[in-house]
Length: 70
Image (cartoon, rainbow, N blue to C red; front, side):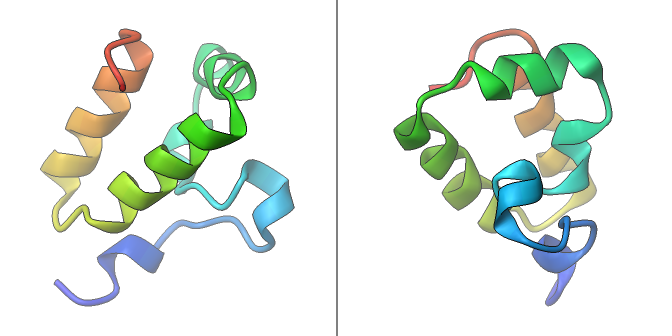
């Protein structure tokens, strides 16, 4: 599914740390990501780059929402 990971990424890494839009749709989610360390956000960026389907992205977003992302 080439190009899936590039869909919905904010222009400019500084706008939302280079994460897909799915992570910026909810204020609580934005606050959770804001409170992450740079290293945690980098891991999240890398994991989101490896997503190959909408289902996988939804699961990753759900994990972050529930505070289960490591």
